[in-house]
Image 1 (cartoon, rainbow over the protein chains, first blue to last red):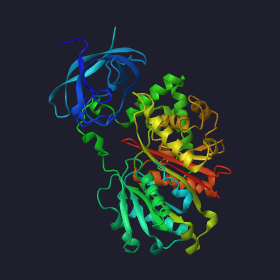
Image 2: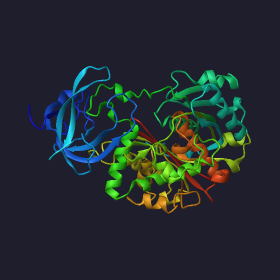
Image 3: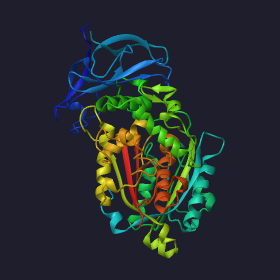
Length: 118
Length: 383
């Protein structure tokens, strides 16, 4: 297991755009079909651009309160993900961490969260 | 794209408006909601139903085939009826289709109606695209906008109280609107209580209830032939729909879509942002009004919070923002919302907005965004 974990994104063969998550359809920038994408490993690390702690939620999971961040990955794309801890501020450097969880049906899943890098 | 000169070649006008109050979900059927608004619009326009050539119903939640079972109760005249779904902008798109139909010369008098009843969950299609992202179900719409609030406040050094003042204003405007779902004046302290997500509190998030809104759109030929009151006809000078393009990675996408759409609308109408006297904006969450005021060019980036605080966007200020109460106080029943914005702008431009009247309002704008992401802007002008 690498530290930080790696995220599987893609690079478009038509225009070189790097994107996450993997997309089975086509490129939003140049319209190339997904068959022209090559897999690309992105390091799960980046910086926090925006953060919100959620107090009320429509779904049973995750249980509140939890914190969501907008993270600019070191490799370019921007993702939203759960950031552990409630002391997260804009500008923090964060690293990915794999955590055991459950989906809405109680099945075990492994989630990628982020944590402020120390 | 814009309607590309059609609206200048063959002018179209709003000649009648009608509403059913926006309210919490009740036993009232959608048929009753819709008919109340349409009948009011027909009376307001002094148009009889057999003179209506076509109807567009903006609805996102009712399911298939909602129009005829409702509108046939005005008389089954056999006219074309079409449902229009464009997420939160469904009603705006129904208005856009009605304007296009009249401007094209195919019809002289067209109904645009918005009606909806929430059924629990929005059933949005993007979640069914089979694209798995990291956030999964953790980012619902209010958290999306809470993140935008975080980004905006960090960028411009704005605090929670300043964002909350958008809701303070819009709740005050809603208290003057008998059709609003929320009609209470609130204190800043009340608005800042009950946190939902990030800095957003319950009263900084729109209520999604039920209701209906209707407008009658007519050509000059229609106005002449039916001998309608020209002095109360408000011209639609632009109608623009855009979807999100790739503006860059991550930051400011929602605002960029609005900027893009607004620019095309100003161009089509040949007006400047400073000409707008009344603006009904997609304020589903308080932060949005600040983002869109700046994106539409009504002020400089980072200025909107101070302008809200100084009363610039109050009724009586330089531009009345969400005088109806907006989505925050009038409410956001989805299908009706975009049509209801046109109703408010028309009443303002006619000088018929009662205690909510923006003095000397000549030019008004209605702006909606929807999941997906889509943006629809209309500009209307008196005289």
